[in-house]
Amino acid sequence: MLPNGDNREASQGRCPILIQGTLQVAHVEPSDLRIGKPGSIKVTPLPGAMGGIRWKEQFQRVDQLLADAITAGAFPGAAYGVSLRGTVVGLGAVGHFTYAPDSHPVERGTSFDLASVTKALATTGMAMLLWQRGQLDLDCSLGELLPGFIVHQGSGGEFSSTERRQVTLRMLLAHCSGLPAYVRYFEEHTTPEGVLRAVLRTPLVAAPGTVEAYSDPGFILLGKALEVLADEPLAQFCQREIFAPLAMQATRFCPSAADRHSIPPTELDQSFRHCVVQGFVQDENCFVLGGASGHAGLFAPAVDVLRFAEAMLGPCRPATTGDLLFERRTVELFTHRAALVSGSSRALGWDTPSGLVSSAGSYFAPTSFGHLGYAGTSLWIDPVADIGIVLLTNRTYPERANTQIQQVRPAFHDAVRSVLDQDWTRKHSSTFD
Image (cartoon, rainbow, N blue to C red; front, side):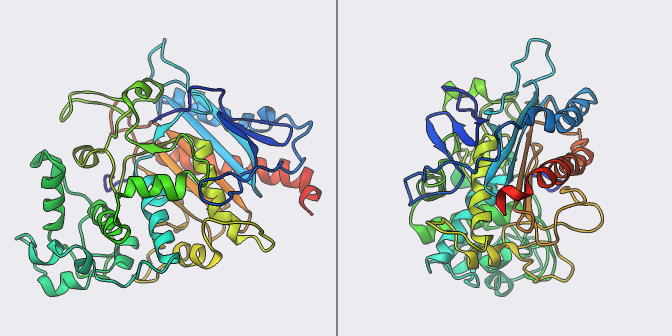
């Protein structure tokens, strides 16, 4: 979404809970996180490692850290999920939708506005599948798929159509296309067509492939390019080819009006929509684009995001069997650093831990990958430890200036890793031997 970072719930049933080694999700039979063929769910028992373990106590230190963050005003509420070796070992929720005394409590099945985590789950997920099926050439010029990017370039840029022809899908995924980080298109355009025309004409601010700049315009255009390749809307493709096969039943763009009350609000918008933003996308450009775009718009609960994490982790295991959404070669290609720009931590559609201070904390392996969302959401995956960790918050409520999430994220991930490393791995390592 915005350059400095980065809500529906399956409320018609019980919240996701882990009981005696099986994952129970509303309207889904007990199953593990492995997937079956597209359109189906592979139903098998989870490893019998959960009996007798009181995970509420195990994650008490994590809940307390989040509760302290709420008290400090970092966000009104949060939900999180943790998977280890294909098993959901933690689902938690703390706080409320807002700071009001009578506000609805966040539950483990509460859906949040994922913000830019959409880039990973939807847009990058779609790109991975199209590449895997031989339908996407990473080095294809964006202009070949969207000619308007070449012939209708805007004024004010120092780069000609020649440079714009050099922008590839690989560069868009690695955020080094030369497009700017963020443009407030919604201030001048009130229709999806108007915004798209403006994005196509956005001047480059750097030569393609020379500078890393996390770019919303880049992913808006990437989403449109993928739609051309697939010959259908991004939201429709993702629902059928990604969310349904992974049993991500509460994941969607554009929640219905009836479901909006079950989604935490993201802000009190006093400048554009002049209302409480609840149950529809916070990002203004995505809002004008109709609520579904390559850079934002997805809503999901923590357990659904974990299901996607499992689709990324499954191919990394040496003895994985059965049907997989993504092949190992696909995961490795998209999650290893792209190395297009020296020093960049960017992979293809994913980020990797960078420097001494990472939002993933101190314990994720260098080969880990993840993504953040402006509203206070994140997903980090460690293929070495076989761990996925999801944190969903509405840190921008009531207003966006609050940046305490930058301190909370690494502390949260370190606390979770401490639980897993000290409690689970030490006590139950023999379970998976």
